[in-house]
Length: 477
Ligand code: 5AD
Ligand code: SF4
Image 1: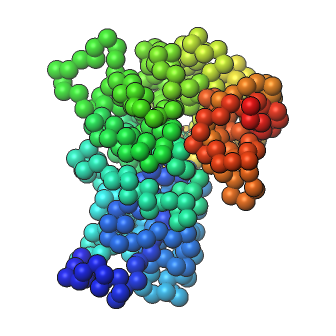
Image 2: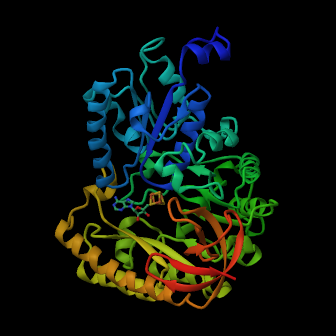
């Protein structure tokens, strides 16, 4: 490390602290990875900044899930080139899934890009930044070999310090002290034919349950009341940690054990998890919603399509009937269970009938909300090579039709909340409006509340008075 012979004080006098700015695209996994980037660079003396012009290091933590997301990254890199020409000492790092997929070629194409790290090699970033150009010519670290379970537990305390409200980037500011993400596994073995994740994040690797519990305890000490366990496919958590001779006893999968272990922690009010693949969503897992009230009444369960032939072509391993069976397990326990989902329109070969089947599924499932996407061919994935790719104009039309139907269903759900009394976990204060707070119900619906005193972090009884498609408005009881 440069200046390692100087004492801390001398170091501060001679060099003002360097500043890091991380821009985050994509999924919650990336948000959690950005927190880790801040924490890792803090160990090298980098302080976070919201202002790109103050930064000595800008990290783009990128998403490659759809072409649109990748395209945004490439145009952002173009803008950073101009910034670097004004500030030659500025370092630019590319991280995340675009880095893993295309980092090496981007390094060749873009001379102003300094270093590249993939999602599996984030921990190499500090070394690359401090040594590249001085001690070493190495400017990238990619691949999946670095298993996080082999690394010391991330210092969550430090992560929180560096991403505290005053200094967090806009994306991190969305997340707050009360509701925190916690990574439990990375990568995916499912190879859905549309999805680039197994190529950019590699095979499934689970963290040790004791490390996860230690992190959860640290988050709770820092003020977390809600934790969301994160993974590309949380339901298969821990299967890779089992020895070949081990079997699952009494249908208790490692994920169920982990849920019960974390839910038992004192001080935690709510426990959520995402994302689940319906394929490994079992009946015993559904039963945990009955056993453990902290899980609340909400789950995200991506279905992708309402047509069996599309699901087969997507390699989803679950039929429409099996998907509805999972919904019925959940709704047997809580008839008002809020369920959200992901859907893709315009997958190769999707006929008018297939699309109608998706609309029928939507009307029958009555999701609380959905994330719907136009199919986007991704390099290396099986579906990108399928014949019968669908016209962009048809995809656009189908997406609009689907969203219109879902918007109405979401609105109906929200209007149905009016007059109900709900327990709201208050997550944050409105940045500008006085005495205005936002929180979420057990069903994960966003509620705006007026309060005269600070209620952040508290569970408040609220009566719902108004509703729109986006959020509810409630008054404190
Ligand atoms: N095109 C469109 N949507 C995609 N998703 C993943 N890959 C693609 C793709 N190639 C969607 C799926 C997934 C969500 C995270 O993103 O719906 O569940
Ligand atoms: Fe992608 Fe399928 Fe894995 Fe989800 S389960 S990350 S959609 S391959």
